[in-house]
Amino acid sequence: MRIAFAGRGEAKLSGGMIMAVLIGNEMQRQGHEPVYLTERPAADWTGVEFPHRPGSVDRAEDLAGLDAVITGWDCVGPALEAGVPVVAHLCAGYEPDLWPARRAELEAAYRLPTLKLVIAPHLRDRLREDLGLDSVVVGAPVNLEAFHPRSVPPRGEGAPLRVLTVGPEPDGPFAPVPFKGIAQVLEIVERARDAGADLELVRLTPKEDRFVGSEVVDELHVGVPPASVPEIYRSCDVYLGASTRAEGLGMPALEAACSGLALILPEIPSFAEIDELRRGARLYPAGATDAAADRLVRLAGEQRRAAGAATPFDREQLIARFAPAAVATRTLAAIQSALPTG
Image (cartoon, rainbow, N blue to C red; front, side):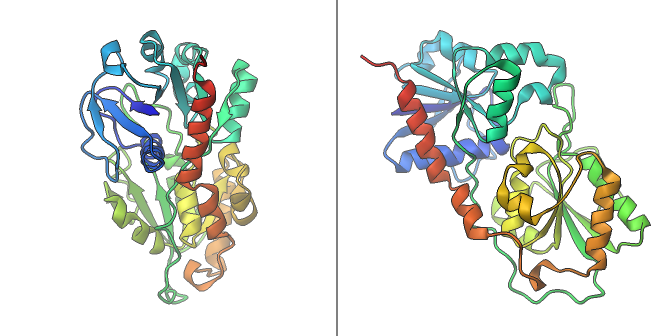
């Protein structure tokens, strides 16, 4: 099948775009013909094995000859008007939660007659409960092979606990709500330090934002090449998340689990429905920074070190669950079922 992953302007490397790349790579390996269709090739995409096709979803001629388009809410309308046989709306999160001021516009896009592909069961449930829409759970492709526990001996007992947080703080007039909870992470760390915990906060973010200069952060990494990211994870002891319900998946938590880190996570649908995380993480009520700080203080007091204790997470099971090849196969099956017959 000839399938385009379409976006506007120059596609930016986000969690959703990383997923599109992984799915497209696997489609090509399985003998299909994926392209990513944007007006300009993205400068920051890495690991893309399928070609770029210059074009726009707003020009029907640029979509000619395709069997399917996989895209986001803002491009599904033009793709439908162009007559593409299957227009698939890939939902890596629930956008009305991310842009509440644009809820009516976003919900109208969701109600268009597209094939809804969602990355997690909680998104399927949300579409059904809020909008009465059916969708197909294809899963989330996450390349976890590069993330594994460190093999060097743990640091001495007197060393501070290295706490990792990952993600940007959205800003600007068109930015979504700050669903990664970076401000809450900083508050949690400050509370834990006030309670006596010896901590080093390590922050990894793809771009600069208003918290880049925060004095709470001890070690900052901005725009790190993907190949260097796993080593940063392995240098830490615990991953601290503070995402809101708007989080579609929470890829860094999975990467941290495979890296042998302890996890402190909010009880939100994206984490709670993953058995491996629910059983092994220290969960706290979403938004309860005091409860999260208490868990961090207890963890520091136990002098746990991820490299010195058996991780509670089954790395191989997580790798298998989020294998890109399986997600691509389910996506192709959904598209094939939606193609017109005759």
